[in-house]
Amino acid sequence: MSDHHAKMTKTTPQQFFFALWGGLFAPLFAILLIVGLVAKIQGSHSTEQSMAYNDAAVEERIHPVGEINLADPNAIHVDKTGAEVYAAVCIGCHGSGALGSPKYEDKGAWGPRIKQGYDTLIKHALEGIRQMPARGGNPDLTDTEIANGVAYMANAAGAKFTPPAPAAAAAATAPAVAGATPATAPAADAKK
Image 1 (cartoon, rainbow, N blue to C red):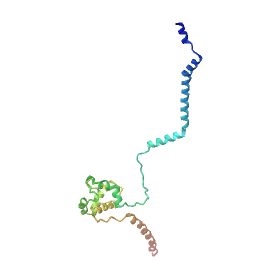
Image 2: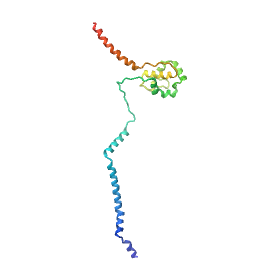
Image 3: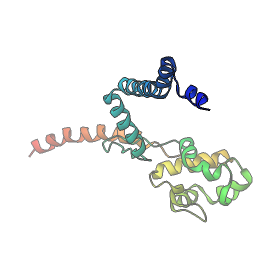
Protein backbone atom coordinates (compact mmCIF):
# COMPACT_ATOMS: atom_id res chain seq x y z
CA MET A 1 0.00 0.00 0.00
CA SER A 2 2.80 2.40 0.71
CA ASP A 3 4.25 1.77 -2.76
CA HIS A 4 1.03 2.73 -4.32
CA HIS A 5 0.92 5.93 -2.29
CA ALA A 6 4.45 6.90 -3.22
CA LYS A 7 3.78 6.53 -6.94
CA MET A 8 0.81 8.90 -6.83
CA THR A 9 2.66 11.75 -5.20
CA LYS A 10 5.52 11.74 -7.63
CA THR A 11 5.16 14.24 -10.45
CA THR A 12 7.56 14.92 -13.19
CA PRO A 13 8.68 18.42 -14.10
CA GLN A 14 6.84 18.03 -17.38
CA GLN A 15 3.56 17.26 -15.61
CA PHE A 16 4.10 20.20 -13.30
CA PHE A 17 4.67 22.53 -16.27
CA PHE A 18 1.47 21.38 -18.03
CA ALA A 19 -0.53 21.70 -14.82
CA LEU A 20 0.84 25.18 -14.22
CA TRP A 21 0.22 26.22 -17.82
CA GLY A 22 -3.33 24.80 -17.89
CA GLY A 23 -4.38 26.09 -14.49
CA LEU A 24 -2.74 29.50 -14.28
CA PHE A 25 -1.23 30.75 -17.52
CA ALA A 26 -4.00 29.68 -19.95
CA PRO A 27 -6.79 31.60 -18.13
CA LEU A 28 -4.48 34.58 -17.64
CA PHE A 29 -3.61 34.53 -21.36
CA ALA A 30 -7.34 34.33 -22.28
CA ILE A 31 -8.14 37.32 -20.05
CA LEU A 32 -5.33 39.35 -21.62
CA LEU A 33 -6.62 38.52 -25.12
CA ILE A 34 -10.16 39.63 -24.21
CA VAL A 35 -8.91 42.87 -22.62
CA GLY A 36 -6.77 43.57 -25.69
CA LEU A 37 -9.70 42.93 -28.03
CA VAL A 38 -12.00 45.27 -26.08
CA ALA A 39 -9.30 47.96 -26.00
CA LYS A 40 -8.81 47.65 -29.76
CA ILE A 41 -12.55 47.95 -30.45
CA GLN A 42 -12.90 50.97 -28.17
CA GLY A 43 -9.83 52.59 -29.67
CA SER A 44 -11.26 52.41 -33.19
CA HIS A 45 -14.25 54.58 -32.17
CA SER A 46 -13.36 58.20 -31.91
CA THR A 47 -15.04 60.25 -29.23
CA GLU A 48 -16.04 62.98 -31.68
CA GLN A 49 -17.84 60.50 -33.93
CA SER A 50 -19.75 58.97 -31.06
CA MET A 51 -20.63 62.41 -29.68
CA ALA A 52 -21.85 63.53 -33.10
CA TYR A 53 -23.91 60.36 -33.43
CA ASN A 54 -25.36 60.81 -29.95
CA ASP A 55 -26.24 64.45 -30.67
CA ALA A 56 -27.89 63.49 -33.94
CA ALA A 57 -29.81 60.69 -32.25
CA VAL A 58 -31.05 63.05 -29.53
CA GLU A 59 -32.09 65.65 -32.12
CA GLU A 60 -33.96 62.95 -34.02
CA ARG A 61 -35.84 61.84 -30.91
CA ILE A 62 -36.85 65.33 -29.78
CA HIS A 63 -37.67 66.66 -33.26
CA PRO A 64 -41.14 68.26 -33.29
CA VAL A 65 -43.92 66.22 -34.83
CA GLY A 66 -45.33 69.13 -36.82
CA GLU A 67 -43.92 72.25 -38.33
CA ILE A 68 -45.45 75.64 -38.93
CA ASN A 69 -44.74 77.26 -42.25
CA LEU A 70 -45.65 80.91 -42.19
CA ALA A 71 -46.49 82.63 -45.42
CA ASP A 72 -44.78 85.85 -46.33
CA PRO A 73 -47.19 88.65 -45.34
CA ASN A 74 -45.93 90.76 -48.25
CA ALA A 75 -46.54 88.04 -50.83
CA ILE A 76 -49.24 88.67 -53.40
CA HIS A 77 -52.17 86.30 -52.93
CA VAL A 78 -53.28 84.52 -56.08
CA ASP A 79 -56.73 82.97 -55.84
CA LYS A 80 -57.03 79.25 -56.42
CA THR A 81 -59.03 78.00 -59.36
CA GLY A 82 -62.20 75.99 -58.85
CA ALA A 83 -60.36 72.76 -59.61
CA GLU A 84 -57.66 73.61 -57.05
CA VAL A 85 -60.24 74.44 -54.36
CA TYR A 86 -62.14 71.23 -55.11
CA ALA A 87 -58.95 69.13 -54.95
CA ALA A 88 -57.74 70.79 -51.73
CA VAL A 89 -60.96 71.03 -49.72
CA CYS A 90 -64.20 69.91 -51.35
CA ILE A 91 -63.21 66.45 -52.57
CA GLY A 92 -63.18 65.16 -48.99
CA CYS A 93 -66.98 65.16 -48.86
CA HIS A 94 -68.20 65.86 -52.40
CA GLY A 95 -65.93 63.20 -53.89
CA SER A 96 -67.66 60.41 -51.96
CA GLY A 97 -71.00 61.99 -51.00
CA ALA A 98 -70.09 61.93 -47.31
CA LEU A 99 -72.58 63.41 -44.82
CA GLY A 100 -75.26 63.69 -47.50
CA SER A 101 -73.30 66.08 -49.70
CA PRO A 102 -74.00 66.01 -53.45
CA LYS A 103 -71.32 64.02 -55.23
CA TYR A 104 -69.20 65.66 -57.89
CA GLU A 105 -70.85 65.38 -61.35
CA ASP A 106 -74.09 63.93 -59.87
CA LYS A 107 -76.70 65.82 -61.89
CA GLY A 108 -79.60 64.38 -59.88
CA ALA A 109 -78.21 65.59 -56.56
CA TRP A 110 -76.98 68.94 -57.87
CA GLY A 111 -80.12 69.76 -59.94
CA PRO A 112 -82.28 71.15 -57.09
CA ARG A 113 -79.32 73.06 -55.71
CA ILE A 114 -78.46 74.59 -59.09
CA LYS A 115 -82.10 75.77 -59.38
CA GLN A 116 -81.61 77.79 -56.16
CA GLY A 117 -79.10 79.93 -58.02
CA TYR A 118 -75.41 80.69 -57.96
CA ASP A 119 -75.63 83.34 -55.22
CA THR A 120 -77.54 80.99 -52.89
CA LEU A 121 -74.99 78.22 -53.41
CA ILE A 122 -72.15 80.64 -52.66
CA LYS A 123 -73.97 81.85 -49.51
CA HIS A 124 -74.38 78.24 -48.33
CA ALA A 125 -70.72 77.52 -49.02
CA LEU A 126 -69.57 80.66 -47.18
CA GLU A 127 -71.84 80.26 -44.15
CA GLY A 128 -72.18 76.48 -44.09
CA ILE A 129 -75.35 74.44 -44.40
CA ARG A 130 -76.51 71.24 -42.69
CA GLN A 131 -73.37 69.09 -42.16
CA MET A 132 -71.08 71.31 -44.27
CA PRO A 133 -68.98 73.74 -42.22
CA ALA A 134 -68.50 77.34 -43.29
CA ARG A 135 -66.00 77.70 -46.11
CA GLY A 136 -65.84 73.92 -46.37
CA GLY A 137 -63.85 73.85 -43.15
CA ASN A 138 -60.97 75.92 -44.51
CA PRO A 139 -61.13 79.50 -43.16
CA ASP A 140 -58.14 80.53 -45.29
CA LEU A 141 -60.14 80.39 -48.53
CA THR A 142 -61.21 83.77 -49.89
CA ASP A 143 -64.76 84.50 -51.04
CA THR A 144 -63.55 84.39 -54.63
CA GLU A 145 -61.96 80.98 -54.12
CA ILE A 146 -65.19 79.68 -52.57
CA ALA A 147 -67.15 81.02 -55.55
CA ASN A 148 -64.67 79.36 -57.92
CA GLY A 149 -65.12 76.02 -56.15
CA VAL A 150 -68.92 76.30 -56.23
CA ALA A 151 -68.91 77.15 -59.95
CA TYR A 152 -66.51 74.28 -60.69
CA MET A 153 -68.63 71.65 -58.91
CA ALA A 154 -71.99 72.97 -60.15
CA ASN A 155 -70.76 73.28 -63.75
CA ALA A 156 -69.54 69.68 -63.62
CA ALA A 157 -73.15 68.71 -62.82
CA GLY A 158 -74.63 70.72 -65.69
CA ALA A 159 -74.83 74.33 -64.49
CA LYS A 160 -73.59 77.21 -66.61
CA PHE A 161 -72.25 79.44 -63.81
CA THR A 162 -69.50 81.94 -64.59
CA PRO A 163 -66.83 82.05 -61.88
CA PRO A 164 -65.69 85.51 -60.75
CA ALA A 165 -62.74 87.19 -62.42
CA PRO A 166 -59.40 86.54 -60.72
CA ALA A 167 -58.62 89.13 -58.04
CA ALA A 168 -54.91 89.16 -58.98
CA ALA A 169 -55.70 90.70 -62.39
CA ALA A 170 -57.82 93.43 -60.79
CA ALA A 171 -55.09 94.15 -58.22
CA ALA A 172 -52.46 94.39 -60.97
CA THR A 173 -54.43 97.08 -62.84
CA ALA A 174 -55.24 99.08 -59.67
CA PRO A 175 -51.67 100.37 -59.07
CA ALA A 176 -51.43 101.61 -62.67
CA VAL A 177 -54.64 103.63 -62.28
CA ALA A 178 -53.59 104.90 -58.86
CA GLY A 179 -50.24 105.98 -60.28
CA ALA A 180 -51.93 108.02 -63.02
CA THR A 181 -54.17 109.99 -60.65
CA PRO A 182 -51.41 111.96 -58.83
CA ALA A 183 -49.91 113.07 -62.15
CA THR A 184 -53.08 115.01 -63.07
CA ALA A 185 -53.68 116.46 -59.61
CA PRO A 186 -50.82 119.05 -59.67
CA ALA A 187 -52.13 120.50 -62.94
CA ALA A 188 -55.44 121.36 -61.25
CA ASP A 189 -53.60 123.08 -58.39
CA ALA A 190 -51.49 125.13 -60.84
CA LYS A 191 -54.60 126.99 -62.16
CA LYS A 192 -55.29 128.58 -58.77
